[in-house]
Image 1 (cartoon, rainbow, N blue to C red):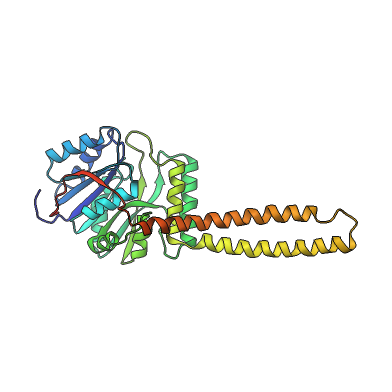
Image 2: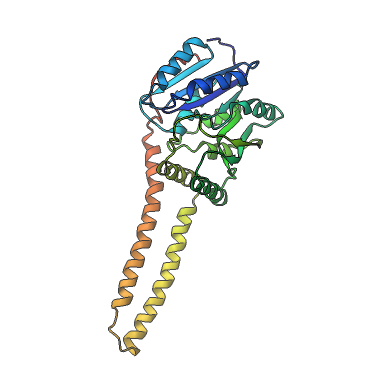
Length: 312
């Protein structure tokens, strides 16, 4: 591996992508024929032949690095590991399934060299996805943009290019529950968008199940918004007002009514207040759980093997 600093570091998270690795690598090298670059593949605990293919690529191409996790630590941790290993003046994050076109990287670089520290690829369309996934993703991004303290761009994933000064700040942020697109928006600097049409996967199936999407959404909301806590507080005030009205109703029935006293209002109060309390406790638990994970100060990922040297 040459010690000369490359212009581009391309970070590719890989999880069970044996059917896509060789085709994606060919597209990457074809898209960057005259640029000094390195490609950092991060194997996130794959159970197929992904690691073997990455090792073969690294043996045939000195610009290829691989990082192999001891288990699956998640997409965001894989991107973080790649960012830590990057040496380039610019770092590109791109998924390993071919949905984000490598052919767009020169355009991202050209835009960044106009003076932008962050250029994120903004989706105009999303091919090969169900209407439900497109709809839920669209609504989530718009909800997140309204409730967060920082403006997180809508209709964007992790496909983007960042300058090394943004990467250095990103590498210094120790959160256990990573949400990189939110962290990069929080860092600031000059940022702009480049629109593109997202393609279908080259092969295989998406690794982002609805369960993973929900967990990812919770990381984004809890990491960059106190809105759920405000909802719990407002709900408490609302329920207190309703409870006060029920108290007045119960008193009226006691002194002026002829019905069996107390049973209906008591039942309503217990069920309603109990539900709101459980909601509030659950929201607080989500935040406290994330605080607990950060206080433990465990490493975000463990590397089993890599061809990234200590000097690099």
